[in-house]
Structure formats: C-alpha cells, structure tokens
Amino acid sequence: MMSGSRLDSGKLAACLRLRTAAILTAAAMLVAAWGCSGGVPDVSSSTAEATVKGTVKVRGKVATKGKVIFDPANMKRPDTAAREAPINQDGTYEIKAIVGGNSVRLSGPLLAKEPSLEYQSLPAEIQSGENKIDLEFLP
Image 1 (spheres, helix red, strand yellow):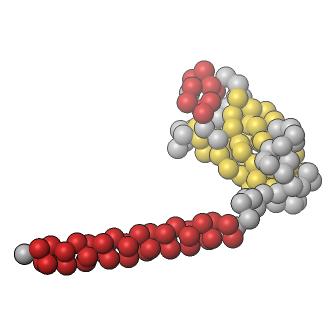
Image 2 (cartoon, helix red, strand yellow):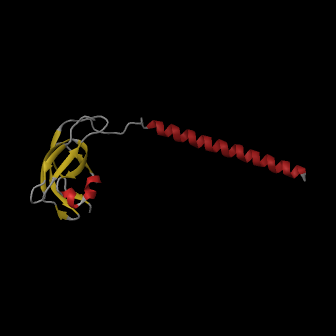
Image 3 (cartoon, one colour):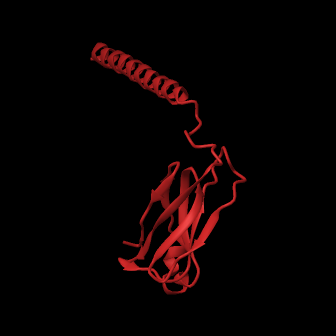
C-alpha cells in the first residue's frame, strides 16, 4: 500500500510542477505582451483649433441654457485649457475646440435641475476643419 501512496505522491508532485510551469509561462507571455504597447496611450499633442457646431440635448430634450465645455487635456498636452461656449435658446452651440480627443461636459443652470450632469462627460474626436457634433446627455 505504501508504494501506491508514493506513486500517487509522485504523480501529484509532477502534476504540480507541470501546473506551476504552465502558470509561469502564461505570466511571462502576459508580461511580454503588455510591454509591447510601449505603455503610452496614443493621444494627440496637437494644439490646432477647429470649429465644432451642434445641438445639446438632456434626456432627449433640447437644452436652452448653460455652457458646453470641451477639455482637450491629456498626457501630451496637460496644460491646454478647456474651451467653453454658451448653449443658445434653440439648443445649438458653436465653439473653437482643440483638434484630437476632447472630454465634453456641461455647466450652468442645467446642473441645478439635473445634478448628475456634473459627473457625466462625453468623448468627442475633433477633426481639422468644420465638425458637427450633436451631444446627448443622460439619454
């Protein structure tokens, strides 16, 4: 009976060694693949401006007050200031924003009616030239 126990222990030890080797190999491959990206996200460093026009809606209704804020800050342009423009009575806005990725949020009296707007932002990718971007908050 002891020889059977030793055999089982031997098989168990071999199984554990194989499992450990597989885990270490998988971990090494994961670390190697992770390092391939360079660790830096692909973000714009442009400071060129482009015109953006559109309509602002909150919960499906046209916003008639407040401001839109386009924030272009990222790791390649951390000190670039956000741009803001008023929302017109018909819900439209027009702004000169920085080309590339922007985070868009609202400010003004809209936040009193919809406090959760303070925590919502929408992504916007601004291209050179004229852009039409309709914004829908809290759809």
